Image (cartoon, rainbow, N blue to C red; front, side, top):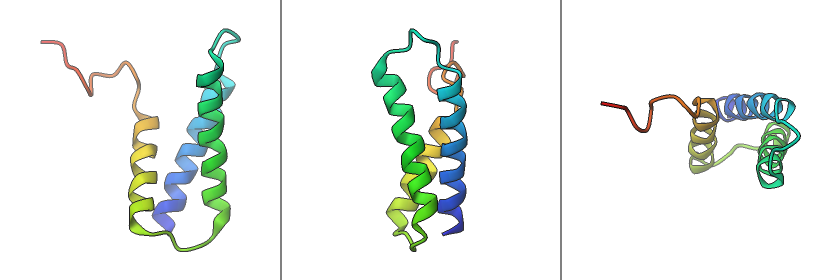
Length: 79
């Protein structure tokens, strides 16, 4: 449960940072996606129940993805 809350906190923190740094020209679908991620992370933190291991794995994966810099060479390295 603690790992799930930590992952939710990371998602919430990154979501709050992303929403606060969006420019006015950001498409609505991107803005709505980050807001929904942040709301979902807050709901996970407030739920208090013991999550199933697939949910913990999903939340940890999402936390890892939102922490990656999108221009970082994780997915495609130049040779």
